[in-house]
Image (cartoon, rainbow, N blue to C red; front, side):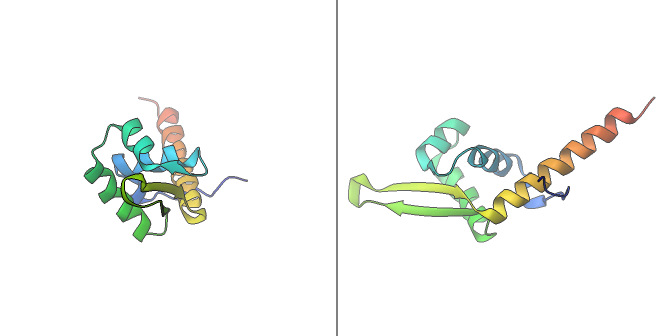
Length: 102
């Protein structure tokens, strides 16, 4: 079942959209994998993840200690719904653009 189209300003920012899209394909993703996949700095990714976490869209899990400390990211159920609705809204907009004749 697909989500109803719902444009989401929070997700729409290009970096956050990239993060959410990447996380939508995984159960959990390592922070360094997301950082490297998107070509972001630690601080840039951390800032965007914090915004998504505060909105309830991303869950952050830290494991280990000291040098072996790892951070894992997961798209929450609310984040999955928001991403699905946002993607549907974008597809709807694109579909309408294709229907316009000059």
